[in-house]
Length: 384
Image 1 (cartoon, rainbow, N blue to C red):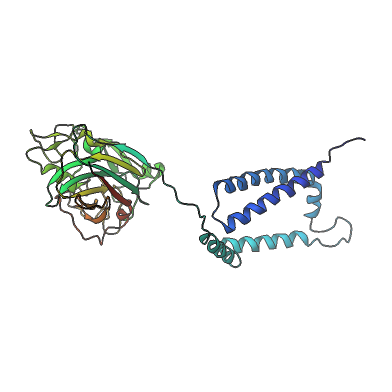
Image 2 (spheres, rainbow, N blue to C red; image 1 turned 60 degrees about the horizontal axis):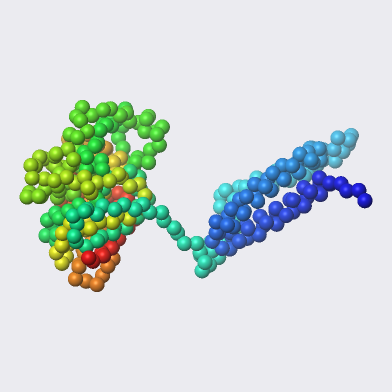
């Protein structure tokens, strides 16, 4: 008995098999929150089906060409209505789909109801960076700060520190390296000096950035250039230490010189651009209650109030920093006498727009996207 390979049969069976898999996975993804396995099978088989369909079109190109004619080639042949009917139907279906009209809207809402009621809904997973800033001479309790970034977190500067309930600075826990080393080297210059910003432009891509701004080297050295408007509350607290003041690596404090200061380099680290878990320990025993604070700021996040021309006579705000909205401050009060181990930090206000003072302003009416730099921060206390 002779054997032969029928290519049409192979194509037809492959189309039937792949279509069956796509049909099943489509139903599963419609009624249940899809898993990576179902999604990968659906995607992979879908591409294989496209390949087989392409082969099918190649084998039947003559027939498809015949079907697409407007009329029969014979004299007096009838008009072929198949092509205009398919074109009309295709335009109608695509129009309803893109405008989210019936029945596509109803099917979409029905699928959402089915998936939301599914108990095995896929949980949201977050990736975290881990950083340990525990000092070798630390003898106090361990603190773990869980920071989850928000929708507008892009490349901010931030600091986390401890202070007493009376507002006296105790110690830093983490400071971004650029701030700790006063490493703001380049200055940003606006190409069109008349251009005014009143929306958040911190998400500009490289092409938009180059069209709008130019970079120029600072006439000062990197060690000499500070940004008091970046984190004014933290920097003023840092400068408030008199007997045992914390120093930047340059030999200067945030707001002046001090011969009695010591370095904060041990608390500094690269700006973490993802969710992170910060482990640290208090250098000494703490009072029964104390504050944990986080201050964060992101340049170029202008809004309608904090527009680039809001304070034209302020040389810092209207200078080369492009600060935009001011820093925002989060706080948690830790009570070591309490059995509580976890403390949610809450948004308590913002700093001065050009760093003129270290006051926390609780009026947040004009602050918009800066509220969403942080999703949430949780402090975990592990008693020594």
